[in-house]
Image (cartoon, rainbow, N blue to C red; front, side):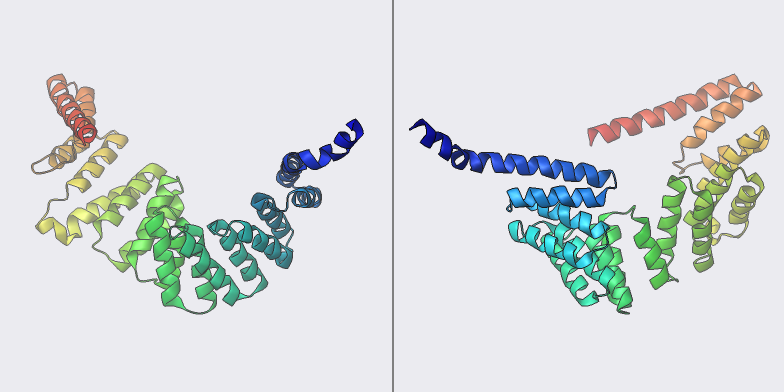
Length: 319
């Protein structure tokens, strides 16, 4: 009787132990994959799926490892097995689409990306990759739509803006957004290049001039920044109807950086004339006044700046 029980114990515990063993092999495969040892990773992932053929993650990761080894057809086979086990995982279809794309099969690539998007309409990589397929198929209008979908989902997706500049080179918005992203990343040369493209397309876009001046300031090119801001005051048609407070603010900051306190004060005082809301000018005015020994004016400017920032903070908390 005892021997009979011992004999059937593996059958009793197999449903419990096999998935556990499969997970151990799976983790080993992941570790080898992260270490760049693709051959060993595949060995352990094969063991994992042999112990638990219903583990979607094992099939998916096996597909990714094989994919990295440039075995696209085998990768697609593993991805397909994963999709049968869990058909609502958009990443699987995105990877299938990319594998087909690398094989030059744009039709099946398109279908896979569309399936990923049907599952998850906000899958930005699937939209972007589908746009690339449309470029290959010379369907520029469809490609443009997909890249616009990408930036609607993720406004920081620089590569999509880059593609839009190629498709619609006379549209200033992608250049402006690329410049903004590069500026935020500290890539000032690339930012300046894109903002210059904006002003070539639209010489009256004061936002681009503002960004350009800021980039030159941060790069330490004060003369170029000054040239841009002074040019705005002299030639920008908006000065007739709308005082360019932002230009005066930037010039004031520039003169302060140069140590030209009188010129800085002149510009910053113009930046705070009603109905201006550029209260940042008070901060620099206070510093200029202090360095000039005008302590009463400095205190007043600092109080105005603190009052504005406190009210803005309180308002944002209330909302």
